[in-house]
Amino acid sequence: MSLRAIKYENNSLEILDQLLLPAQSKYIQVKGVEDGWKVINKMQVRGAPAIAIVGCLSLAVELHNENFESKKQLRQDVEGKLNYLVSSRPTAVNMKIAADELIMLANKLSEDETVELQDMKTLFITTIEAMLVKDIADNRAIGDFGAREILSQVTGDSQVRILTHCNTGSLATAGYGTALGVIRRLHELKRLEHVYCTETRPYNQGARLTAYELVHDKIPATLIVDSMVAALMKHRNISAVVVGADRVAANGDTANKIGTYQIAVLAKYHGVSFYVAAPFTSIDMKILSGDHIIIEERPDHEMTHVGEHRIAAKGITCWNPAFDVTPASLIAGIITEKGVFRPQDLIQQFGQDT
Image (cartoon, rainbow, N blue to C red):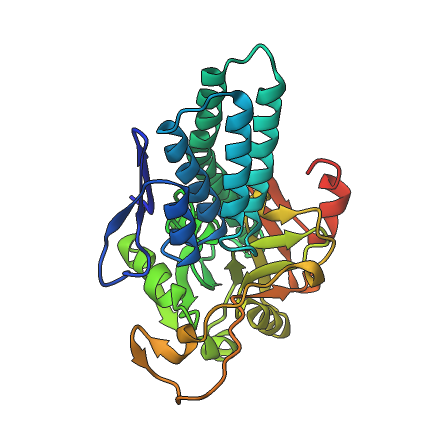
């Protein structure tokens, strides 16, 4: 059974504190929007799908315990708090898309004279709670489509070797995972020979989180440092690279954890197919290309220290972008719950639907 990073039952929300992994597995309670903003911003919860779910569920928890005098007051409260949650980590688009959709729902319910105040509140909360179930179903579909795509590129019943970057599993989603969901599905089909995960400096999501999940699920895996990718591709016959995404532009350019771009360049050089696995909520048709994606910059402390121990010389300046953008030209396919698409096909097929 895969890990549960998000627990939500009877209006109680808890998240697995990912800053403590792998040394300690501790759940912390999220009592409302302020707590939701903090755990997202501090990266106690991370991964674009999980950010959206935890952010929205933190609002649901707060709404459960609040009373409103009018539908207008409820609508205004919802809009203000959702926009506040979006500011917690701006690069990941899932929270913004969820906020926009929920604000539209609040506006619609507020204007519908047949809907009473309590009904509006209940329906709004129920819509948020359904996000958990849908995310797991979407992830399983991503896993299935991705596994079939990768296996279609190999002969016979050959097993595959996969490289992944950062963390895209149960710790980054409601469950199962996106890129790690593809890996899980290959393992279920007994077609996965081995998976290699990068450490993902400077926050070490690969070493702390992905490795933790792979060991937990008994998936054959090896950890490598970020600078070993070229050597790995040269000597270990990698079948494909599968990574996640925090935002995909309309032309297929993809923002993901820093270090993804260089892996895509190396994959192109070595003839290794490079795939992005992400739910459709990560695709932002309002952004034409990766040049327009806002890249979050993180504190120097993440680079200069491991925990509280300084590893860099005092006085050195740091540049610490959390993400980079991989050009669509380096991406073989974008694996979604609706199928696998070539980057150039996104606008043509879905530009009018999103």
